[in-house]
Length: 479
Picture 1 (spheres, rainbow, N blue to C red):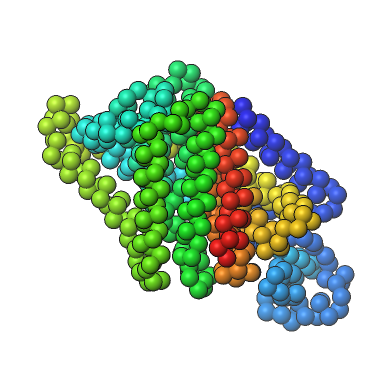
Picture 2 (cartoon, one colour):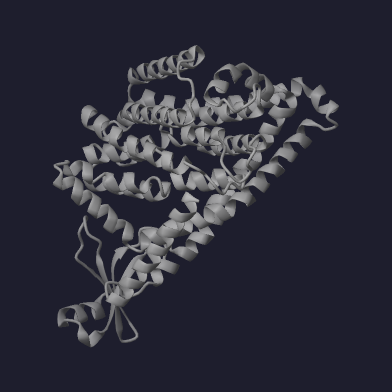
């Protein structure tokens, strides 16, 4: 219900603002909102050539292709005059994201179809884990801890192994593997959910822990910083881990208090301390490496572990081939069955993803997001917050809505202010230490047709806010 109302609010408010801008004269056309593509120039006016100043008119007629660009400035978009059929079209600024109709197309072709391919492959592997008995063994080993965090889950339930694989993939930055594992976990949790259209306590806890974004190896962030010529692209790794870890702990505590989980459990404390020790140990190892060593380590560890998981699944299935024979199937046929289920899951989530991304596209291109962002930055600056911090806030504000959109702001902030500036580094931490909350909600709850997400969205947004505040403190402390 909360998600539905929020979706309606951003959709309707964006439409109202677009229409107001058109009829008030602030916008010359709203065609770009529907049909424009990211980085396309925005049409702001159209005049007859005779109405332009003489020097512009003469320059256009002598310019190549009768196109002239003026006001070249690295901080402001160029203004372009294009002469055609006795009229001059004037463009200024560029579109922040694809329009509504291109978003519909790209959601299917660039997002859902690749996601369906990942789902097919990894769901095929997970079916092998189930039939071979590997998932049962993993669930049995981890049950003592998981039943403390997820009291409603029966001991040795298959969802435990899926959640473990999801957390591990997220931790190592394996996004393509994390999503299929997470969706399989949601399906498994839905089987024991007594109210099928309402999120269970276990599903809410899983979603909030997943969305807190605990990541050890921020490979993509390091890549963006290296491309922006950062002196040490990996210098944000430790701040990213600290921020995302605090976000994870906050999510666990907020949901745990709501669900009255026993935090005094000895097994829970031991696992938490072990996790902290493992993170600290890995950080100490990575920090003693030089730049080339860090790049080598971060680029290979995740890939090695993913290949290891695939190899283990296939080898374990081969060793336990007798179980497949007893189930009247083969290893390959089992993989195909799982892959088919993955494709069906992709088809199920497509409408949810489409609805959310189209609303976000309209919200961004309407100009409403920039106004809200500027207001927030203005309020913070009047409170004495450094301009270097407020310049990074657009990344934090857009991150819950769109990973691609916030990534664009991240790259722009590094190009404008420098990758080694506080703004550039803080933007990197914002991008790394949170999830695309609304996308995650739409995909994961949509995959099991849950309509009432209860307090999941509110909790995830609170955790996002905690990560933003933590990132600011950590960044100013480190840099």
